[in-house]
Length: 290
Ligand SMILES: [Zn+2]
Image (cartoon, rainbow, N blue to C red; front, side, top):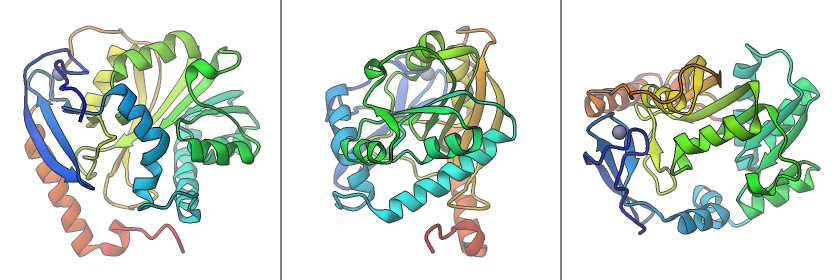
């Protein structure tokens, strides 16, 4: 296991306490709670090199239980998620000319954007297997931001289930805003919801609530235009995910607003999820694959 995280990735405080400790497929996962702002983050966590290697080679495989080839069921899940994401995005934004999807995996969200908006779409994916698959579909996909041929600017940047994997989210988002996003562009994000999702696994370095996610975005110079809790495509009634549409603006930096009662909120959210799954199983747990 890699280094301890000395300072909170949101507010920089060094005051934190244990929050959750477990084994995930025999990998220890320890999460801590920042006493200053309420952010839940993993510490110790994989080093950058270990995390890059983990995402390059292991991440999808863990979720596919050891299968080292592309699983059609995973593609079906990604397609269902992409359709849900596009439905949320297109409620607000009518025109897109250039789209960058960071962590594009097999490229399903890219395809959905290209179809809906007839826009140019570019993807970034660290995982070799999925990047190759997306390239085979004729999509333009690179490994990292640095590998983009002409950096340029995009009018939409999306990150579906990516921000929770990034060690320094404020710096990363700031860089996107300063170097890659049009000044009036859109940043479209989805992450697991700490108050409903199981969420503690080796690759999840940060577990967001809607409060801490909004604080991270504000620190990076984004203002939230629309924030939605939802569970699709996995659940009609359990708010497993936080989906946020943002634009550059507002006041970058400034004091971070603290979230209190994080542990009780998580217990209540997880309890409500169990009740929903018990009393309304069909709506609480959707079968994505027919
Ligand atoms: Zn903090």
